[in-house]
Image (cartoon, rainbow, N blue to C red):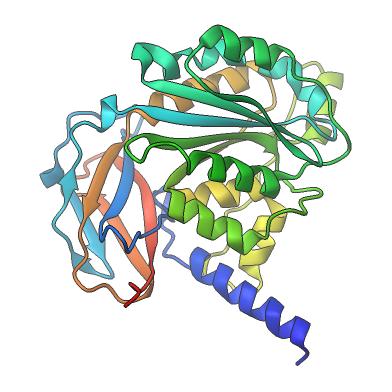
Amino acid sequence: MGWAQCKLKRACIFLLLLFALPFSGASSQDTTFHSQSNVVVIPALVKSAKGDVVYGLEAKDFLVEDDGVEQVVHLDEAAEGSPVSLVVAIQRGRRANYEFPRMRGLGAMLDPMLEAGLGKVAIVEFDSHVELVQNFTGNSERIAGTLRELQPGDGGAAIVDAVDYSVKLLEKVPKERQRVLLLISETRDHGSHEAKVEDVVVAIGQSNTAVYALAFSPSRSNVLDTMRGNNTNEMHPSPDLLAPLFMAAEAIKKNTPKAVASMTGGEYELFATGKGFEARMIDFTNHVHSRYLLSFEPKGPHAGLHRLRVQLRDPADKIVLARGSYWAVGTEK
């Protein structure tokens, strides 16, 4: 086996371990363990069978298992009112300009994030290159003005580079703020050249960023315009998390935003109409402050992948959307 093949194999093994977690419906996603703090944080969204968010639960209502061992769960009571730093990363390259009319009013849709002075928003635009067009601000008029000036870009869609840039930007904000990335892009990366996928995965975990992805398919949107609103949503199967070695790498190639959102315990949605985009944005702004912030302290965790199971002790008709694993890094001696 040649040097290049060995290097590729090691990279794929690394990615596979990050993706290889138990998957049971919508409740299994990734999270990351920070060895320096010895605390595993698990944002969890609870919904009823009708899709409504369930409030009023306490730590005792949740059952969290780490590799099958029940943990002592803590609940951050202040999570709902905690300040948020949000990076909005918008694709402008390739045929993204066809989607601009569907995203009209995005600035106003972000207003709930800025209420009570708790939110700050930065805007990143990307085609073949990534550019910060608005640094963090709580000024809604400035944000709306920046978004109105969005212009078509070149033929690239460097999604991985944009995620890498945005996460590094969020790493600079105070640790007490929630770190959120709203990624608006097509499903496949085209032209990333600054960042390596495995490095981005590590950076996401270290920054404790939640990624919410709203994805579009330019080709299908074009058909939608032609057919006056009739469209079948583009659907991608969830990555086969227990598949052979190269499936993890293929998942990122096939649907970059979905894979990245899954790693962080965020959410991924498709949109094909203006109304669809608005509905997804309403869900996004509601869910940012609707997640329970659970945590526990593992005792002597082994390095590597840990499997998490998060559920309610009395689920009834409720489901929990939470991360399904964390990655423990050995503490340096």
